[in-house]
Image 1 (cartoon, rainbow, N blue to C red):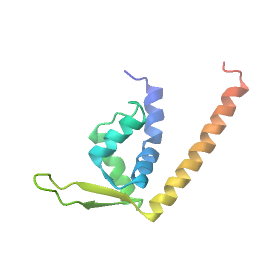
Image 2: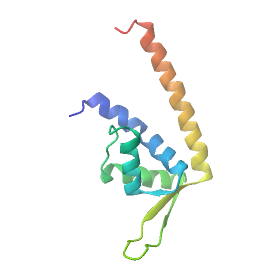
Image 3: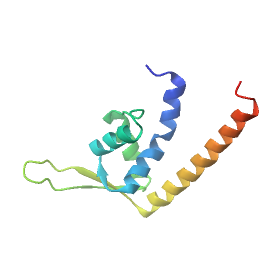
Length: 115
């Protein structure tokens, strides 16, 4: 069981990580869940109920676009998500903000000798 602090840290970066993955390649929900889990070495093992509100929010903000792919044979159609130009720009802004934030926190933690 994770503590509240760890849960809040994850919650704060999920949108950034999901947008980054969609910027890397068009993808669908189940694949996003698998990639988040894989690339985070299991730390971001999400349920659909956590992922889809993030995707809807990113779509509402114009950062990603969704379209239905045609199923092949017995494969059902999948809702594919692709980054827009605005989404790619926002992805870069998120990453810059994250780097500035983590550098600030690291410096802050060094200042008190780790107490």
